[in-house]
Amino acid sequence: MSGRQLGGIFGILALLLAAWFFVRGRDGGDPADGLDLGAMVGGDVAYVLIDPPDAEPIELVRRSGGWTVNGYPALDSLVDATLARLDTLPPGRLIARNPASHERMGLTASAGVRVRVGPAGEPEADFLVGEAGIDGRFVRLPNADAAYVLPRAALDPLAAPEGSWRDFTVIRADTAALRRIVIRQGGETAAELSRAGGEGGGWSVYGAAADGAAADTAVMRVYLETLADLQATGFPADSFVFAANFDDPVGVVELYTGEDAVPGPETALLFSTGLDHPDVLVRRADDPIVYAIERPVANLLTSSAERLRGR
Figure 1 (cartoon, rainbow, N blue to C red):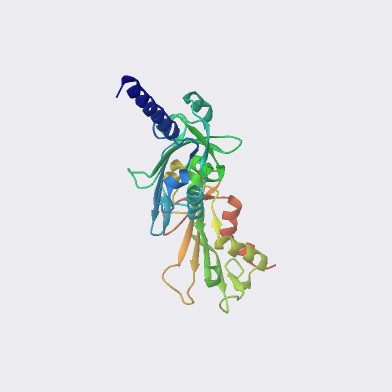
Figure 2 (figure 1 turned 90 degrees about the vertical axis):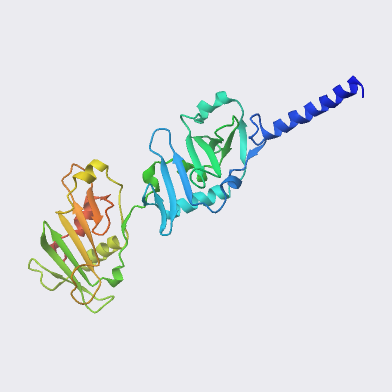
């Protein structure tokens, strides 16, 4: 074989190799036309680690009782919806290959949100989420130069703070099963509500010259609706949580479902105020998680007998 023939063969091989690198991307890992993030994420995810550039990492873990975020109950519907959107993402559109564009897109290692999906330590998907553009959010793989744009619906939650992942539900009481509600203020009984005739029966108020008086139906309707789905406004900082004295709460709401007197309530809400916090802090007696709720809502739940009785 002549030298010219060998040169031709090597030339062809060089062209094929160049074409292969073009398809794979300049670092050997970039898709040429689109980033199929959905295929990388998959549909059976039990662990997600979100590492923002200027905040503590956010760890989402699926357990038997649902998702947790950094050990706290997570909003299962948000986690499931986000993962479902990631799993069904269309391939991302290639928008840039020049590393000089990373800073503008928020895709530098110090600015992008690092997301790892899959088993801890061995993620199946590892990518950076950057700023939002007209067509979506920018994404790139950590060791690649190519940048892509993908729909925001799946990626926006990944750039949100930890609090947005948490479940804001303080309590969801089965109000149809309630038979008695005891409200205490400063350690003293402020009101006691008793339901007669089982589910659908009317409520009577006891305490403060309202012994056995019929409860105000409009007030009770709002009261029970609030207990049926009590949502927090947020989560207080640790300094407020440590300062709150739930051993001597300013208010207590005890919920009973049994017909007969029992040693303790089915559940109870404990309230704490006076901490220079704009809201009222509350937690369940059987759960250490502390929530913040609006003062008007807390005032309603800890109402006096006079406020609850019918006019």
